[in-house]
Length: 116
Image (cartoon, rainbow, N blue to C red; front, side, top):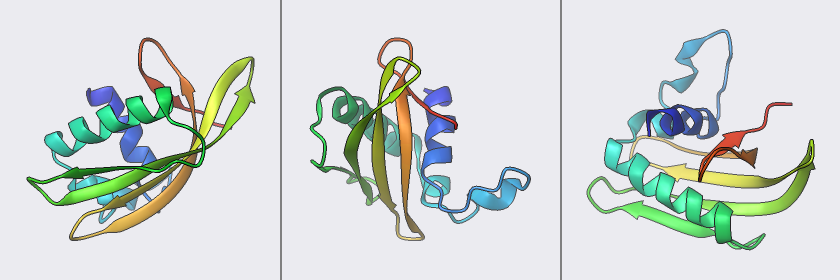
């Protein structure tokens, strides 16, 4: 779950700066709890595995009031793999953000960020 959390931290920030780790400060993901990550991860796997393009799936953690949405936008072929372009929106009381990313299937039910 920690590997998924690190991957998702990268997805949920609007200020990715490779040389400067302060990019995560004040991003929605920096405020996520373990239970937020669990709900987000389950929603992500279900949405990417079964969701139709253009159909938004919302998630919410009633314990923290953190929430968001995941929208598969389109299938993209990447090196003989069927990957998905996805839009993530995350909202916490302290921050909100939106990011689009391409994710490709990994081992089991994991999805990995495609780096160009």
